[in-house]
Length: 108
Image (cartoon, rainbow, N blue to C red; front, top):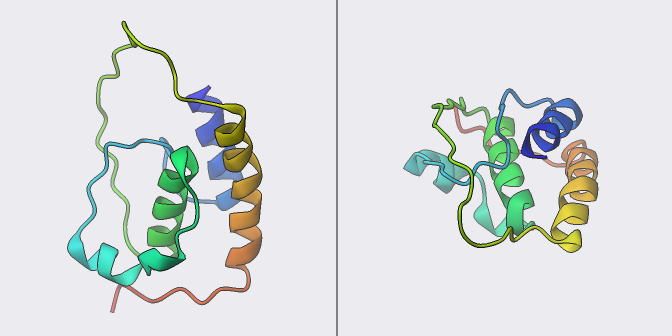
């Protein structure tokens, strides 16, 4: 499911990120100071998408480092219908609102 979700996000938002919902992320201080964290609205997996998209729109380079993902042995997924719909519809809202938003330039 993550594969298709990331493909959907890449297609709609046009960001050069393969794993858009990855939570194992590091941001440089300059990125976090630039992207206006108070304007980040999503929660759950969509939060990861919005953070990456906003950093990209601010002109920052995104670098992915591959990891080996081991399938879950214990526990259950936190994925719910609400999280799924937020990600599905939220990506469309994020793209639409980006047409009218001025993003700070982080590459000054």
